[in-house]
Length: 363
Image 1 (spheres, rainbow, N blue to C red):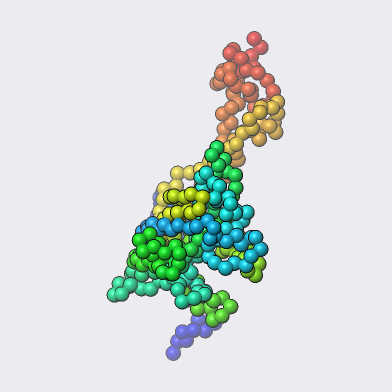
Image 2 (cartoon, rainbow, N blue to C red):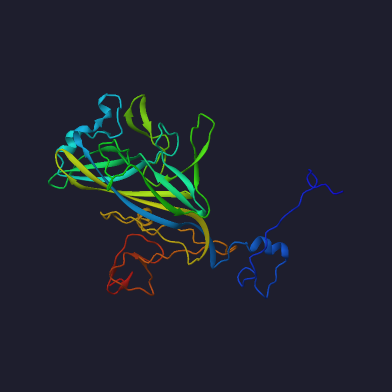
């Protein structure tokens, strides 16, 4: 009886070739099977390469709006322990908000309260009834962190800081409104390839629960946020795209005075998965090169610094091709270019002049 699993019982798999192409496998110069495996990759060819891109399979949006009394905000950096969810920090004070001519907001983070819930109210994602490809998303008690810019009457930013507000609080919350800021919202999203998970309690049994990835603007996972009870509150890194359900948000001050602020919040919820596509390869992009404003005396090193960027111009999958060089269009040739605007002559770009009679002319 043949053994199916042991150290000496190994089945080797190989990838098929990409198919015969005129560049990798010319008809007049047949390659051996060994050479074909090394020269013809299975996932691309010189004209068509494979690209993996995040694809939005489903998306929906919703608007929320809540009012906040400026006097009810808590400045957690003033030394007081944190008592509530609506806070200001990062140098922003309640006086700054009350005296602002205009207020500009940017949503940098949202805690959807899926993992490690502190109470009985928390967001959740469940399969829709009798619809395995749909997910029923219920949001409750989400904490939205804003970057706030205070603008004066001359349109100058006079103060910047951070603010965190709670949306979708319970009925006892002072910001509750059945029309604009209800206690919870629920909707269905098409998720054919599943959802993302996170550890509910990393220090406990590590139960994994479905979650939403917020695509925000926090870079470092160890970055410290607002002051609070016990030191600092840490914000996780969120400025990347992940598979599963993701969210983006925009905010706007819709009304305000020196006592209250009404802040509108737009949530975009997306089902994103990475999918492979073929794309036509037309060459590498060339980024724009910054040039100095003040011109200096020309020399070889300065010509290089002010000239074109070096470019690795060998295209992918073109094995054995010579590198292509970029011609310096600024230099003129003694035989072909007689422009009066040229500053370099011949092959040695030393300081010289070109006049209407031609480069290097003695006239």
